[in-house]
Every structure is written in C-alpha cells, then in structure tokens.
Image 1 (cartoon, rainbow, N blue to C red):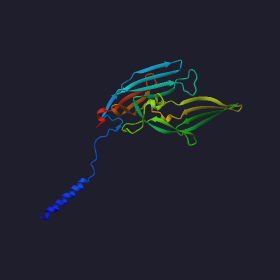
Image 2: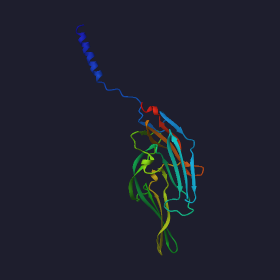
Image 3: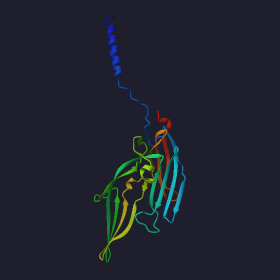
Image 4: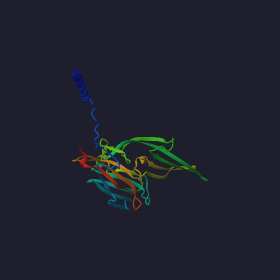
Amino acid sequence: MKKTLPFLLVILMVGLIISCHKEPQPNNEPTFDSITFGDYEGMDVFTFDSIEWEYIDNEDMAFILYEGGFDVNGKSVGLRTLLSHSPGFCMPGDPLNYYTIGIYSDDLAFHFQTVSNDVFYHADSTAIQTDSVTLVYIDGISSCTQISESDQFERSYQINVLVQHNKNETLDKNDSYKNSLSWGSFYIPLFNSNEEYPYVTVLDTTDIIVYQSYIYAAEECLCFPLDEPFFLGFKSSDENGERLGWLKLIIEPNVNGHYIPKPLEAAIQKEQNLNQ
C-alpha cells in the first residue's frame, strides 16, 4: 500500500497537466456578421403587394417617368423608370423605347463591386446589287461579349455595379457598400437599354452606296434581368449599430406595358440580435 499511494499521485498530476493543455472547445454560438439571402431567421421581414407611383407623361419633352418608393424598417428606398427616345439618334414620332431604370437610397448602403468591362466591336455586312449601283449595309455593334472570334477589341474600363444575388447566397459585413450619394449618381442603375443609331450614308459614289447602322451595347452585361426576381444586399448604419439586409425585386411590365422595378420582399437583421 505504501508503494501504491505515490504511484496514484503521479497519475493524478499527469492528468491535471494534460487537462490544462487541452485545446479550447469551439464556440458554436451563431454569428451575426453575415446573412443568407431568402432566409428569414433572425430577420424582420417586410412584404409589398404594391407601392405608390408618381406617373409623368410629358409629350413636349417626349418622355414617360415613373417614380415610387417604400420603407424598410423606417429606411427609405426609391425606384425609378425613365422611358425616352434612344439618346443616340431620334426623330419626332419615334417610339419611346429607351429604358433607364434605377434604385435610390441615402439611408441604406447597397452591396457593390468594381468590375472590369471589356468592349468588342462586331460588324455584319450585306451587299445588294441593283442595275445601276451596289448597295452595302453594315450593321455594327459595340458589345460586352465577343459575338465572333474576329471581333475587334475596343477598350476595357473599370465600373462600379450593384451585385446581383441569388437565394441562399451569403452577405458579409466586410463586403463593400455604397449609398446613392457616395455612388456619384442620383439613381444607381439597374437596367439601361442599348443605344440604337439608324442607318446613315457613309459612302455615296456612282458605283456603290454604303449605309451603316450602329448599336452601343457595351454595358448590356451589367443590366439586371427583366421578368426574373433578383436580390440586392444592403447595410443599414445608425445609432443602433450596423445591420445587414436584403431586397427581393423584379423588373416587369405594368398595366401600360412599361417596365418598372417592383419590390417583392425585404428583410433586415433584428436589432436585438446584434449584441448577442
């Protein structure tokens, strides 16, 4: 028995030393530095059946304007559609078919990223031989995609764009955010139509006449989709701290057949969860 007691003390001491050097247990507490799009847990949720729209139809200036807005937990968000002639070239009586659609908020900062946009020039030509002269039609387009391998690279530039999100993607507080005032434009673009220039004569001789049309579609790839719901992320900052949230919107025709952006749902982190 006298030999057993020291042996037991040694075992107890070794056990204490090992327990003191154990790795800390992982913290399984939930984090509130990120959210998931379309997830309602821990969020205040808002739905919108319809919103009030101001409608202006200005025949003298040849444009149609829709402006509306809604609140997310007391934070204001504005939406806008401007329908006009193509800015490239227009004649009296031309249809109003050029859309400029945007979103606005001073209270919320939207998730954005800076992307590099490459522009390529593509041209198709058609020749028609008449009895007296050859008619050549050239259709040119500056696009953000290569339509064919022979397209000529025009330029590349950096541009800030809102990030389009899908359901179940995540948003983090460390992502980049801007409100409308810091964006540099009143309404942040969601959709802009392509600029269309009709045929003009670029060469006229006794043997050949060349006509050329042009479409500027350099930012077509940056537009949000039509007739499909999409998500935007935002951060709200005030005296109560920072909260993340998401908007679910769709750009679709109204009863007049004009495309306008409509809010479907919005969600923002519950205030009581921020300090957990």
